[in-house]
Image 1: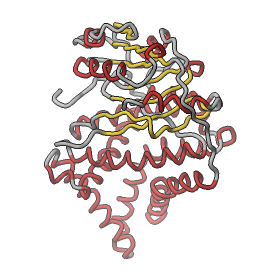
Image 2: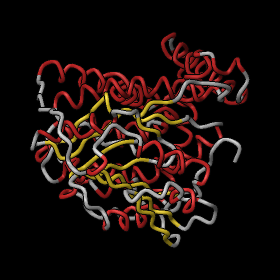
Image 3: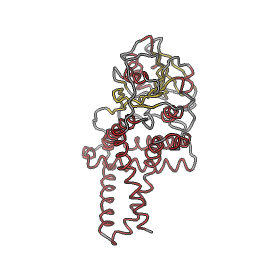
Image 4: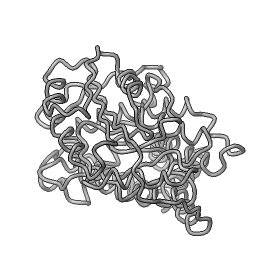
Length: 383
């Protein structure tokens, strides 16, 4: 039985982390689906939900108003979700008629976004986070693929600001996003990216449906496009910058929240898991948003089974030793926090790997116990 568990776990882990990315990259080369892009300038409504974002919302408004995009075609909607600090005042400080600030009671991010979209007048809805700053040409790059009528949504590229004295896990996350960016490009080249990231993405106004509570809003909104038969593509030149989590503790809490809501989002969009209707996209969704987020389970099985089998053959002994080394390095990286040594790749990547999989266990438990995560509380450096 231990051998069966070992090989089953090893097979599932190998598929998720190696074979699936290889399939995506090969498919992009063998079955490309080109979409049209053009320098169009449709009317755009940028929607941001903000809670206790006094420290960054003013800069965000300035950033958006300074973009290279026709002023008469730009609307900014800032929905304050029950903020008790100076978020509303800071958002209104510019006094620009293109900026509309909704001072709402605390309802949760979904409710805030839905209220803002009701006031939107643009053909294209652009969503972003309060702490994500757009490159000057990001909006033009983001809307260009909408020149193709088959495109219903566009995911932009989230990039992290240059590292300073961040925790070592921050460097691990940057490494992950570099890999994820390559996968997104391949997915888009052959059909659809799985979903968008909340830092920067856009959908046609006609394809937006109210965001339900308890799910990741960017996942629910962007996958609604695919559910309605349109393409969700990746625009790697539409860039938004933000800082990575200031500490492992902050990043862990964010991962638990995102993964809990993300898994709930897959439950919401479970029809997209049917390959008869959605083809390879169903495989992508299962592999990336379900299997990868539940990898902690086969990883634990592999540890337990390889330890039991370690004396029964050199292969099992090597597997047990290798896992002990990876988890030992990861634990060391997490314990060192912001120490300069923790930012070495040898510690940073295992630390991030361990943090993500620990967070995924708690997220899975939240989903099983139906423990909702409907509210969010931003935690920036120094908070």
